[in-house]
Image (cartoon, rainbow, N blue to C red; front, side):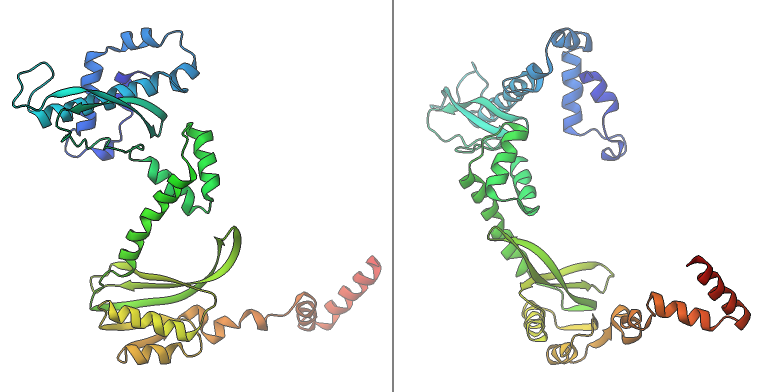
Length: 329
């Protein structure tokens, strides 16, 4: 597949609105005009797949060239003149440093331009940055899937050829903790039309072992009809005392009233809701109401069900069933 075919047929039509072309599409069209399809096919002729996508292959070298060109454009904007142009002041270019950045394609060696004053702060690849955007998301995705730090490091090395140490993986995952803490303490609306409270027993990986923990979940429906996850809390077991702590936490974060609270049949739960939100109407979930909850317990077993069915048959049919069963024996 060539650059021309990519620019013409591989784009997602949903990403364009009213014929507007994104900067990325414009760049692809410009590159397709500068590099005709025939010239690209001639350049790729005779290359092995490993020479194109492998370590040190064509894709990684092109990625390095693109990054270096973007960094050079950032420095030109910072200095106010292009390479070889008239300096606007005493600050000028002074060579480039070498570094290796980890990308989705693997390790890419680049040259980072520098200025004399050291005031240049690149945005694409910042100083002391060794990973491009996108790799951190993959690390977090693997970590959320339950993989250990060691497994993530080995997986990235096998899939992308990227050497990411365990300390680096730990720093990436720890950086999310601040966002998680901010989300858990964010302000909430003053009134919610409906709030669903439930506890799920979930198996989680903790300290290199799998444990079953109680996940307290609160989902609210705003007055505009939008659903919102109010919070997630973890405990060893479910109990009405901790639900009281959850309700107090919601009240401290700005929730003044809830019209309807949909809960299960946990003992003491309605009293906990009344203590924090006295005007809320407590609705027991239909799944947890007694007739539905104990319906399976009243169903007959296989043998008992067979006897009941046979008792409802006429006497002649019952005799035939018994004779037929005796003949089979």
